Length: 296
Image (cartoon, rainbow, N blue to C red; front, side, top):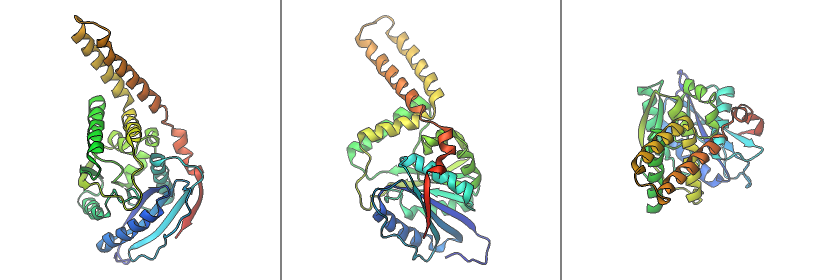
């Protein structure tokens, strides 16, 4: 537990949540245990994305967590926009030095929080991401996820190995909430905005309670939203790939050879469509969606 007589760093742990109260209760107990030796002040900000289930099993009988706030949203805005709203709330209403973003379900392992903390001591002004090197899902999902990363790399030139699990210094958090594409994808926004980054190796944990909500369609949409943040790069690369392909098939033109072009056009149109979800006004007004704030 931190020494209150010393000037300590203040960490806010941001947790987006929808109906996963049993999981977050377990998570908070594990966080409280893991931060036992931190010389820091740790508070929790939970963004309740208009859950349809009543809150239960959540209190503040902890030894090391200083406080818990629950931001109750009026309307469901989905996971990424919950993170954006929570980050904006923290930047505008809280006194902090770092924000750690992690999911409520256990897939972001609280055991790895100590690695983040140590990195902030070594590199106090650098964003730290939890780069996944091992996953816990089935073989089919793992293969599809690798395909997603490959497509992202091919069309954006960016190899994104992390999800939401990350630690932002205050200055970087404030930079992010000024970017309209944060409304679409948190991880892509970090890659596009913040150059001063390092990472910790991260293992994707096993969910505490509920099965994963991510299915194949969800993964496809997740991939598209990440790629859409780099829309201009995608357009340039798509045109380049198209020109190269047309050059290669120039002497062997057939209807069959136009199928890849059709797929590329559909892909590009979809990326442009998804990128239109970027909305700086939505981000700026996101705190209007907070119906109440519970302090536990």
